[in-house]
Length: 621
Image (cartoon, rainbow, N blue to C red; front, side):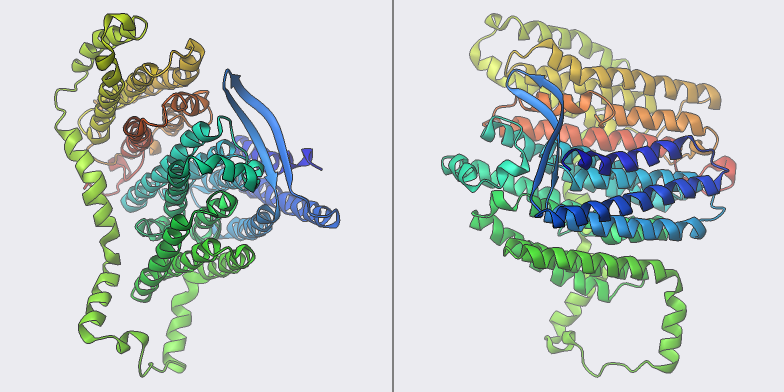
């Protein structure tokens, strides 16, 4: 029974691979592959669940296989099954099957029919990896898959400006959630000195023993997990992304942003509950966060003019209550609440295209205005102020832009000396730094302590410049690749780890970096111009194969789990000491911006309105 857990991941993986090779004109085959995949997964899940319940419903932990192992480090894939997984499996498989059936006809003759079903199966693969994960490393694999699949689904109508722009916004928030997980993984290695599994976390004796003398480390890990959960589940101050995610097709909005993906933050809290259960400060923060989100999201939902936005903020409010239930220890109520909210939001979003006609009939025949509402009980000024804040969605989008992304853009725009020729001057300095790593006796200890921070700041500067670059796509790409080399050099001063660790990290980056650069050169040759990043140019319409190749390169440079660099990130970060908070924060920022910058280059070059197709183009804001 243990070994069969792997099939829950293999079924959607096989369906996704089959879907990739089916020609895009074969609609019946494409939808049939998705239908069979979702249906067989549902049947297998029901059979497995019945068998598990009849045999005592014991917790199952399967250490599937070791991906990489070195001295003091082990990266392995672990699968886990308990009642939390069972609920998420049952709800997810049923809703996916239902929406897949709905989409077969809803998207008939849509130009992106193949892309939609490919993305749906890819998303479902990531969802299953997350809910069956037995450790943070396995969960992070699925977490990354969900991020890129979400971007592709939101940007499904890639010939339009707004879906692509909103897809980038959502992906940026997802990268913040990624950093929360990375920080939790990093400090967990130092706390446990091993790749900790969720089954070990349920051992309260072991958890209490490790946290007894490391209470601050425990709080830091818990808050990192909360950051990841809040960003993924659109809690304050990240609530604005969910309504932006509704730019995709209605079926994808229903199944993922209304029911499955948005509840994975709650899943993460449920899965790690035994770790932060005896940390009152963390539980209070979660309760306050959930309560604030519920109140604010309810107010915003009541003033939205878009049906999808109303449903999105209503779902956010309910998830805030689920966060409170989890923090209070009501696990069963939280699971029941998740299932009810997921089914309700899926239904509401699927019928949302018809809701206007329903409301018109209701208004003509049955509508009677309320004599008094809850807001009327408040003082007049407070009522009006709350109304205006809700109307503007509490300016959450603008606040994130002003206090997070805009300062980064300002810093990056000041680095004007970073040009293609200017980057050549960094090569000698990099070689000197590499020489110093293996000849530390030439440098005083005081200087050596500061070198990791100096080189990590250089790496951050390179990726910041790439993040804001608009004139030359080649320059943005080269800076993106170079920042990885400087980051490895910075961490190399902490411990003298072997070349195999460095090779594991840089092998994928170097290969996909060269592949991406050659793709840009090929596009320049085909279009007979130097491709810039000033506006969305939509070249995927003219060069779909080149667009796919470059997207593949972006994933590799971002250390997506299709390359050894994914393991290398976790491995390299494990060499950052627990007292080097500044270094890990800078390194994490580099990781966030690398992924965002890579996808930004792809979006600006290959997505958006294409001038040759007759669509109106827009400059970036």
